[in-house]
Length: 182
Image (tube, rainbow, N blue to C red; front, top):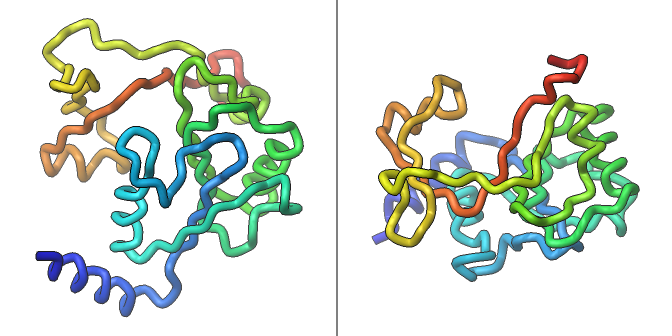
């Protein structure tokens, strides 16, 4: 029964005059929004977003002169090959000039070509693997099971709902201690 989902989507569609538009970067072997593969597909996440009145498209930055003006966010999801300097510059302009939003998800042991991009923002995305030394927080399939979150607006719903999150291979992200932004 999907009646609740359909009703929620209809309410959101009426309540929000303009759906938010998300763009997913392509051209580097990224995970694809339409792919149903359990390991590399994003179809379930995109279905979740559609139910909340988000629209999406894919974008290849080498075929465009910039991120479209209607973009509410640009997603770079697990590229297999590095982005080109021109693409990184387009992303930087989207953030700096258009006050855009970029969500980047990186797998360990993959070169991404965005070190300079992160450096400008005072971020280090170390090419390391995050491991949980205790078997207590490992799910049956080998993924990490996270059930404690720091206080932050992003994690508020997870904390209040006592939710757990399964996380696959992950790399650490941290503030650059030498950055003037910190």
